[in-house]
Amino acid sequence: MSNRHTTTDVILIGAGIMSATLGTLLKELAPDWEITVFEKLDKAGEESSNEWNNAGTGHSALCELNYTVEKPDGSIDISKAIRINEQFQVSKQFWSYLVKNNLIRNPQDFIRPLPHISFVQGEQNVQFLKKRFEALSDNPLFQGMEFSDDPGKLKEWIPLMMKDRTINKPIAATRIESGTDVNFGALTRMLFDHLKNQGVDIHYKHKVQDIKRTSDGLWELKVKNLDSGTVELHTAKFLFIGAGGGSLPLLQKTGIPESKHIGGFPVSGLFLVCNNPEVVAQHHAKVYGKAAIGAPPMSVPHLDTRFIDNKKSLLFGPFAGFSPKFLKTGSNLDLFASVKPHNLVTMLASGIKNMSLVKYLIQQLMLSKEKRIQELREFVPNAKSEDWDIVVAGQRVQVIKDTETGGKGTLQFGTEVVSAADGSVAALLGASPGASTAVHVMLEVIKRCFPQHLNAWEPKIKEMIPSYGVSLLQNPELIHEIHAYTARTLALEEKKQANPA
Image 1: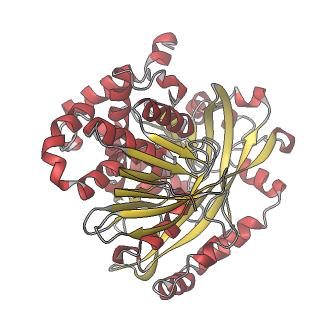
Image 2: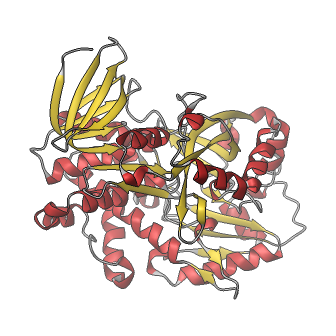
């Protein structure tokens, strides 16, 4: 063990989009605070935030059908869609602030304008999509959404998907031009470059082995330097655990009461990636379909145009997979090691409740490449197997916890913050919509963990996020202002100017 022992104000574990966002917010709000980051890999944004490990959709409920639910009376509940859209507007405002103040440059390196489309087949699904369109299109957050069930119109919107399609059942789509493709890996790396310039102490190839509370209420971390093999002690007043799938085991090490009765279930994803530039060139949108009955929400099939390393790509998926690892670079023992006496009953209850999910995952694992290509042909009728390669995406650990409504062992598919009662530690767990709502989620962490500073910080937060503390829905004028401001600052309107057609 080395005799190195440092004390700092804030420690962030994990160099992903969440730590990058929290670190950047705190540096703006409290520039004199000392921040240290530990990441076990050799660079930032390599796990869940990496561009190949997530869908790159700026999740704002423009096309994701699982955010709008049909109620028993046939009406559409759009409350979750509104919430997620508002949260993405917060992210866009913060990124605009960073660009405007030259804290990060070249927004097109991480965000591009891209139409978001929902596509369905079959009478019932077309009815659902039409009702969804009617419920959303009057809402100022979803302004500009179009609906069509005319195959001729759909050929204009999605030529690749309509080519050679046999139309023997009703089909329909909605389209909205204000969607985005976001490269969260690139954004994470830009934010960490900015933090380094701000004097933040970033340690790569450093693995946190243990966490404990000192007698004076600080958090002491035992950290191994993976290059030298030495173990160091680092202490902080506030600790944030943003280690993706690795967050749950680290949260358990804190021993806080809030970490009990929580489990995690890892689900991995696979994508088909097109290797034929001629095919890639024929599609320009993110197109989301409807999840199969019994499939978990994160398995909604989508055909995505992506911009990675300034090159246009085309991905289809995700196909669910299973590995007991909590991270792509994790251990096969992760799932078993996360089962503790205090969450055993929670985990067992979840296993019994989610037999259909387990069955679905087994079926997905058994799929041959040809079967995956058959699923792709629902979207691209003339897809050829040799034009597509299989790529393994990131691991997502879904939260399992006891809830009042769901009872013991309820599987949560969202993004969740767990924090200590005294606000000295917070951890981010869960999956979708994840990165898209990072700014909203990290503001939530700041509210919970630093309530004593909120009054002093509020003017600065409002400077960074003009809509802070205001319901966008009740202020349509503000929505228009924010849309115009973020589109201008993040260069999201250039495409339209360059190509008025």
